[in-house]
Amino acid sequence: MNQQNQAFFTPFTLPNGVELKNRIVMAPMTNFSSNPDGSVTDAEVNYYARRSGGVSMVITACTNVTPNGKGFHGEFAGDTDEMIPSLKRIATAIKEQGAKAILQIFHGGRMCPPELVPNGELVSASDVPAQRGGVSTEEPDVKPRALKEVEVEEIIHAFGETTRRAVEAGYDGVEIHGANGYLIQQFFSPHSNRREDQYGGSLEKRMTFPLAIVDEVKKVVKEHAPADFIVGYRFSPEEPETPGITMGDTLKLVDTLADKGLDYLHVSLGEFFSTPRRGVEDLNKTRMNYLLETINQRVPLIGVGSIYTAEDARKAFETGVPLLALGRELIIDPDWVQKVAEGKEAEIVTEIDKSKQQELVIPDPLWNAIINTPGWFPGVS
Image (cartoon, rainbow, N blue to C red; front, side, top):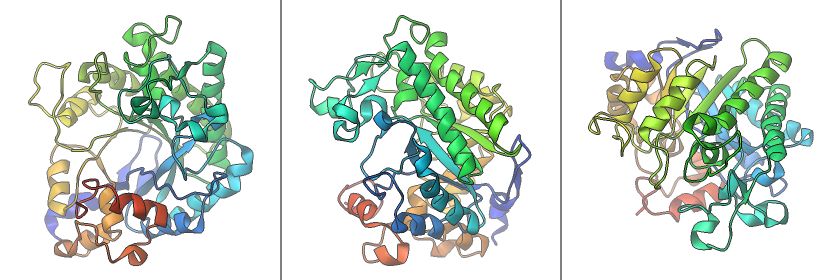
């Protein structure tokens, strides 16, 4: 192994005492490949198994905690106890390869396709349509309905129930998906949250829903899980909308989350070294540097964002981030970690090979999405 890469392969101990065998994690990525009823497919299980041999921890694609939170076609479900055997298949496949299995739990809110939710009714913090990425972006007459307070409480409870199912299905932990414009972020954002009750208004009030979910998940873990069950939280640093989440807003959220007894925080970034849009004094300092300073080693931070080569990873680790997630790169080259460990980093593949779907063990729905979305993956134009 190249000695410069030795740091990737030192073990890392999470706050709850769990030791990760190395510093590389598989990022959560939607794969569109489950059955229509929300159960997992053989292709999906094989896809995870193929990518779990080198990394220390695999964070799954998101799973919805309620029927009206299903955000993607081909998403596997975690909203009923009937789904526990299905959920277990992925946990088992990951763990058999030596990685920790983390179930990402979420609610899509206003970003859900109407055809996937009961009565086609989209719900959110308020009745504000999405400006980008959701069906209401293209169809302004499709507005989400503001959740009633009792429904908000039911969804908080549902995050706890899906956490219990993750425990029963044999997962090593859960990741609360508070990023990428979905329901938890919709409550934190001044764009999507115009409420005037306890869940909206000031920045502190807009934190109420995310923090209540963290508390509920931790309560369920204390009641139902072993002491080494992992709880993480993923967040997006900023929104382009006005009003929208600023880097300054996120630093206040992260400062609060860092004292919540979580096992890690996980930023969602397209580019690891990206810089802030607004909300902080120095727009030339990277978002990662701001986050690491704010957290100040109170909780581990997982960094991510266009890390393709071992050199990319080395540069990322030089910032002081303790853990690094690879997403698209592990789809392109499932043996990335093993190649670096064996001193074969020159053999790492960094562009998708359109002739190797079977060898890469990529399910048809995900493969079709990759090759039909120019610019999403290197090698697809």
